[in-house]
Length: 268
Image (spheres, rainbow, N blue to C red):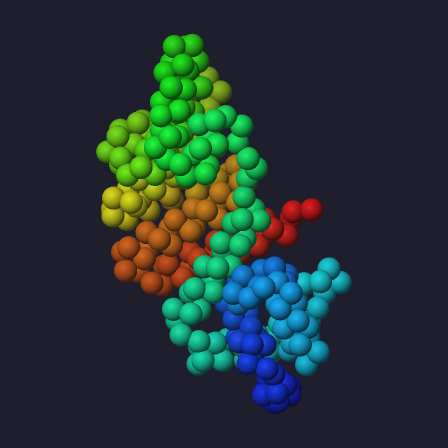
């Protein structure tokens, strides 16, 4: 059977052969055309054509819902060829493109307040000004939960501006404060821990960042928030990269891709 796969691969156009190799990067069992396009960095129509070429030659199997997977022996061959013909940097770049695509698919909807909308569009300085006013208003209204949320969002904006000391100061006790509310808010406790991790990551303190991301991940698993679990693994991969731990970086990226694929597959 392996010889048959090798014969089929020999006759493939170069672009289809490259996609075949890159499909070995996938942590899951199958892929849709949009994700394959991100993986290979080609338009989606071209990815559909390349996937069809693989299926025509028996190198990929198409499911009823239009997704494609590699049979076991073909996957083993794809992995061998990827390691032989694709650089490690190229394989890593393909996986990161896939993660970016899955993150976009799994992303949360728009936010409704002006400050949060600016924050979501990464207009950090304007967001910080808006959110500082929101924090003042929440503290004046004596609404503890709203004040904690306002502190969290302001800290996120400050991380974007690079004002890491002030962001860390705002975030420092926030996880415990969310936990100490009359109705503990574990979801936003995890977000606060994640934001602390991001601040320390930007400060080039990956060990501390890993600790915060790990705590956030534990909460998100209990809360079954899959998309944010995936985001934590992306952050953990960056922390591992800063530490020079390439094995941990690759493992975290693989886990992130698995989770993002799970989220994307659950979308209508």
